[in-house]
Length: 352
Image (cartoon, rainbow, N blue to C red; front, top):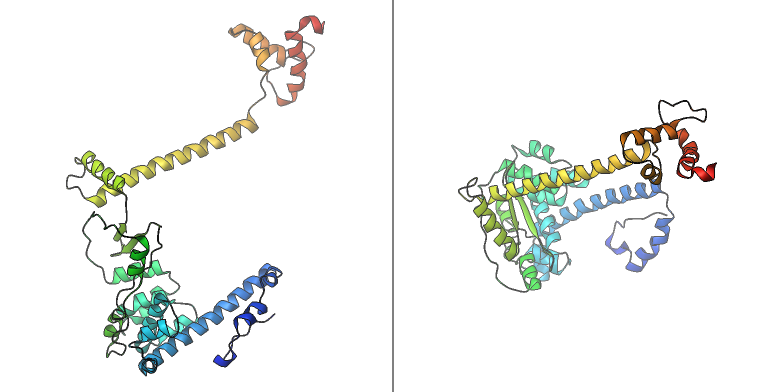
């Protein structure tokens, strides 16, 4: 079965053709090696189409063809005519504008060395002088790794520690308002004279949040500094104030970062020690179960008494062979004979 990528828009298969072309049952019939091979081939095709799509978006924007559809900017054209999401439109427009000055970005996007998110992060900091070194360092890096790379290249100052009460509003309204950039922020000036002005017209990219799910932000400010932001409950804020009062001697300035780092470090040490202790006890039980020597029945040990001489006589009675000679040690092979001799001691009349 072969999947063909259409070279002409008129040859694009319909939804029914796509469903009939590769049913899920056909995928289940593929071997593991064949499935992985097809996945790799499809990814290569997807990357080739991606860089061609970015190149087309850049050319359409440069010719201002979006005005034919009565769109104010390329961003509006991508979202309202091409029906891309805000995030998809932002990344592709940013990559297309950066590729005008740095065409190598399209080649790296096509062969998988860079992804759209990485290009959007690197584009404002790329110059002809640092392009080769910076792109080499960013090759095959994740978005988080590229963010750290950019923060190391252009470090930002520390952010102040802040705890403030958020306004009460519905989660759906908050998510929509924070996730949808305006048309003025994205593409209000579609054709700029310089790359920096073009990228600034895109505006900041915000990450949509899921309603009802707690969200957090970890943003690098430098090579070893991060901005951490999250939404906490009133009980958590009260615990922070209590922790500040308890740590006033060690952290007199009440630095929130130091207080939280100390508390997290102590909690992590306790949990790691507890985890190691549980694993040690589990290994100890496993070792005793397999390697411990056999013991006499509990009833026999109680009947033999608690004094040292009685315990010695009981051990000798269990360990001694039938002839009466004392055995120096007790082995696992003698446990069967133990049961008979233990019965003779516990029930002498029956044994006689």
